[in-house]
Image 1 (tube, chains in turn cyan, green):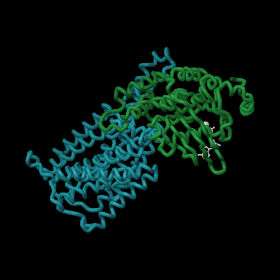
Image 2 (cartoon, rainbow over the protein chains, first blue to last red):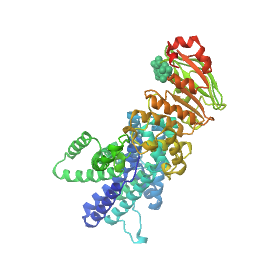
Image 3 (cartoon, rainbow over the protein chains, first blue to last red):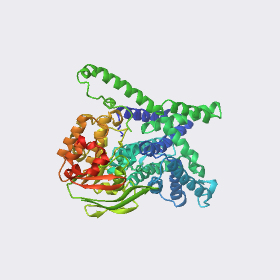
Image 4 (cartoon, rainbow over the protein chains, first blue to last red):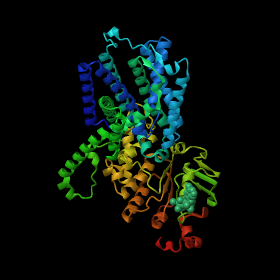
Length: 345
Length: 247
Ligand SMILES: Nc1ncnc2c1ncn2[C@@H]1O[C@H](COP(=O)(O)OP(=O)(O)O)[C@@H](O)[C@H]1O
Ligand SMILES: [Mg+2]
């Protein structure tokens, strides 16, 4: 079950402060990287929501974010709608598309689920690639940014745009947190741990999975419309399956099923990419090696590993304190969860 | 309350359910006996919808449920426990019971509020935990506790959905005499409104709790009657090869 532990809150606050600090101190290129991290963080957050808490390993989350970007572009650059309205529409339509994909794919499991989501992602990719209305492989340019000059915010200033993205990421986090601590989210985690039993208890498995997939899609739609505004140009490449694969790598790198972990993973991944590519073109190789290390070390990911170690230490301390008591009442079984910090799916 | 008519199922050449019919009144407690491989578990699987019978009908409270999904039957009040523990390993016992209780109180699809923090859900979790003797284990992870406790949870989950028909598949399999005793007492405390079917190998327990008995052998109902009649039956003595003496 998901619990927003103090450690998670602390890490989220630290991350937020670090982003704000970076936004104010970094140079132009640094702020661009910051924005890239934040938008990517939203995508992997959405992926962790379904993969880490519902066992739905989606290979179309990158493509769905791309769908959000295209919808935003259509409603602004083509139809001239207000960007704020277009952002809402992009989120809703991406959510609806995700619901359809979720409903269909939730009937499959394991590798078949992965393949089914991949197929949907590829369909979206080729649709966009071949649509002349959407500019085909040339993509679409002239995408506007949200105009918040009314309240004194200039989003053409990269720093202010980065901060807007940060605000959206925080909203997305709160949203995911809320979902995971709702009846729906609890049921989803139950389904991940035992789908057969969940059914026997009367849970509507497909509906629950599809709904959370749709909610995850809302976040993706928002992330997509931010990425369209960020570059102000989009191309089908945005929907390429490699982005979805990358998102999965980041979730595992950061800590599957921890919600905050993937955000840290996104920062680590993007920073690593830019740092390493200064020295070599083979940065994928480095990421690959790190991923293998993470998986071999227990697959808990960067943040998951930290959480795991702290929980272990706390459990040890609690056990020490209780050792004299336990001698008296040997029968009482002791549980790790007293530490309150251990990884709670 | 539960009416099964002419249920048939084959797995290839194996006829695992042969024209099984039975009828339970509301509040009746039926024990199903039969040697290993007789088709008892497969019968349960068909009742709850995990396996689709080749033919026959299943009615719960007068309603034909044969073409309903597992989850729809469960929400209609048909609940089961498994012979092989089928639990939520990565979460706690309290959370597991909470998931079951959330379904019975229609809070499992709540969008915004926490089902596990809901007062009604918590009340059911407390009651159920008390019923099956898990009050002290609610915070423990399912994967961390002993087999006996997992067995108690197996029944607890089925109870926490607040069913009207409860199917229990060898609830005491693999546990010691003191837990069989505890389970016996649990049955004594359960509402007499609840219709119960138990697959049970412990003869003392079986004869004590049963209002009626059904014996399956090679997928067929070979006996149906009261515990008293069962004791007298020579055929059953043969099937059980003297196991009767324990009863
Ligand atoms: N899914 C299945 N496919 C093929 N054979 C099965 C399947 N499930 C059960 N069987 C067979 O059906 C018979 C009855 O099994 P079961 O219902 O588990 O018996 P019981 O619960 O009475 O011990 C066994 O011979 C078993 O091997
Ligand atoms: Mg069996």
